[in-house]
Image (cartoon, rainbow, N blue to C red; front, side, top):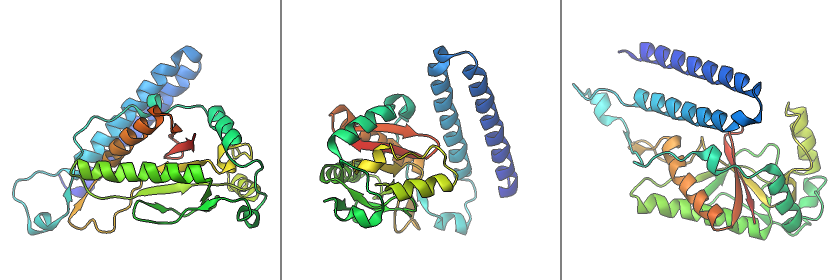
Length: 260
């Protein structure tokens, strides 16, 4: 099967799958709150099918390897079952906000100039994580939240090494939002952006689950969904130990985390 035909088939499968899930969600929404668990289960099943399709694209027949195939990077697999992220990481936004108000900033900074006077810690790219294109937030956290981010990133790195996997960095996609950041976010097309968000108190950060960083993938690489298996295990341990709250954000493609 040539590449164009394979891509066409995969595209049709994904379109059909997403149409099926959207139709199912719409039908279940009409039947009331009793259907919520079924919705979550179908969403998780949909994610798993999409991941299997992606894996199928990456794995080509081994017969008659060409010179190009022999020199292509090797994919490393984490042979563990995918966790049900929606079920395990479903701490309500209200819980995040309550913790943020209790342990974070006493007032929301109006603009970025005010942030430096709040006694926060600036987070920067390092050996464990990178800060990704913060258009609507600034890289500052409370000391406790900065420590929690560091602990999660260190545990992720340690787990990769202990399981004989590749060394990847986490990608932090959102941090502290000022009032001005919230306003700009609303203008960008997100009407749900609120100044009454845990992100506004310096206790909360987002870690992407569709992007991870590695400088050189020319010889070996891992798919994001394989790396998320590892990150999910780390977050479950941290959450169960009472260190943080975690919300699996499907639309934002991230784990929304508030330090406790």
